[in-house]
Length: 464
Image (tube, rainbow, N blue to C red; front, side, top):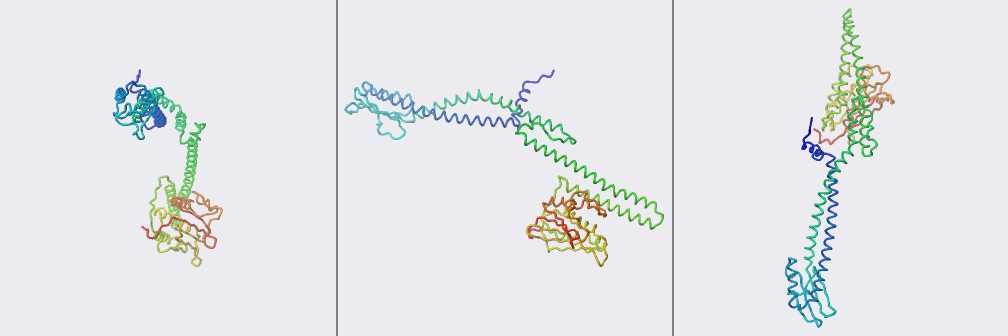
């Protein structure tokens, strides 16, 4: 039989109070509220005891005056009486002053210091006996009242604090533990409901919806579930489209390989060999595009954003594409200022330039030397932005498809050129990561395509 030790049981009960928990926060708030209430109570008792001490001191002074006016042989007995009162109060000798006069005003007895010489901070009593005509003036230092006030207040408040600690403290502690266990039950129910979810079960959470305090949390969880479902659906579509994009050139490669192995003469083998090389290039390009879209779409993507000059980079990429353009008799040019400072990630902007120039070269039909195709890359700094503009006089993209072609694997109907449908999707994703803007417009002669990319600019003196 498993019997838990008493100390282990106590540790389980105190665990919510020893660690960072809502129970401890609730107990702290309650203790703070109780402390404020006790402080208010103590202040009220302090003021009450102060007023009571003053009133009692005033009554005591009046009683001293009444006793002195009736006293026999005041010259002898009055100083003794006052001395005893001062000794009982444990204060200075002159804290109580008096004088006694007869009906004619003659001084019968008086203290060493006259009560008529007191200033503020003293309590006085002036009394006259109608029978014998005596008058008595008594003055007492308010320090007596303050002493009584302090003693009474400290005594009363210490008793109240002790009673509060032993009576209210344990009750508050026990009530807080029970309250938190009861109040946090819907949260535990919600956690069990969430724990029952699987990657394939992302239905909305309905548990604890009836509690207004938990409604915002449940709403945010359901929005997160919806985003996860959308991400899963997009991922499945991506894999399906990627498989299709890879299967098509692979099937073509198989056919071309078969032709290569079955060709009878050297001319047919050379043609099949050229087709195989072209298929491998297309397959390599598709794989490279898939890797690029996967990388820039990843949640963990990190860009090395720094200030750089965009002009040398553009010159390098245009130079790399010039040979392909010349093979198709395409006139490619770059128009740029001396320097164009910009904040960007070099590797991804290289991908942007390569994709835009490659699309223009790919979709421009082969032309004759006397009527070449045109591709113009322009770098322009305007206000607080740098614009990369790639324009051509090719077939272009109809206006109704320009919002769609930036999505993955979307191609314009009727386009027979080989491609993966990822070029502009990659460009759009990279531009978004740079917090820029992508705009598609008509190209040269209102027949081609102009792609405009805006990036944040900086001062020319900041170029790295």
